[in-house]
Image 1: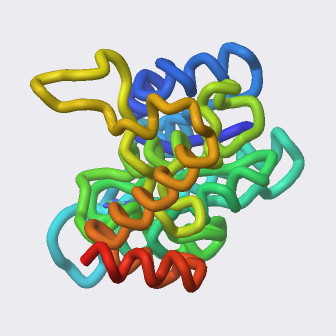
Image 2: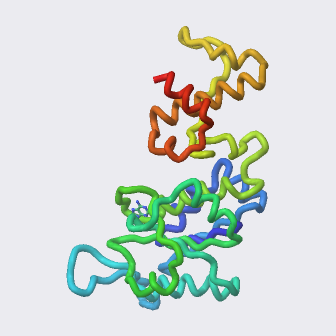
Image 3: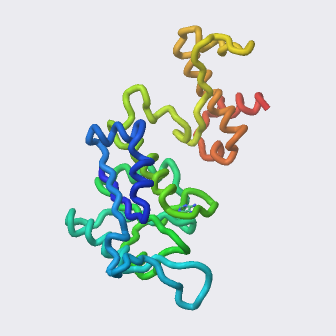
Length: 241
Ligand code: ADE
């Protein structure tokens, strides 16, 4: 899968995405992440990319021309128009479901905003998806783009190794993941739950499922409402309260 990131800070996104699992998948050729410097496409002799907003108001806006030309250079090069995500607090909230959905694409363009935003006219021309990573405002779109590339990439087949499966983790079936323990068996007087040492796979599976239900009901009751529970599980969960 290939990501094209349109940004004023290419080093920031590349340096942030070349380590650990994403870095390894890039080296293996499963992912390709290219940062395109919007400034390189400015028609202005001083490489200016921003200007004052018509009608007045605080701050500067990114101008349409450099953004459009940077986007067009990709489209001309690959001869198709991939989905183009604009990172904005005004967008739909990014979720695990959206990560899985975007992971089906072969190419994705991410447009990182800066200053007070981008001239509306170029957004209308090129953006297919307006996406926010949460209800707070950041200084630029680079961190959101990195968050999205990370979450989308994990869902691309081959990016996670065998030992790092994405199927038993948080948000699967609208439940959070169960608690996990490693060695030693006892730490600061706290013991690993007995069932996990039993080697009894069926019991372990049941315990984990119940712990998922418990942790979700405690921390994310809103999620639990969307989860599919058996009658028996609903009854069991009620008894725990
Ligand atoms: N740009 C600034 N804040 C943002 C947010 N919360 N999500 C996506 N892009 C943003």
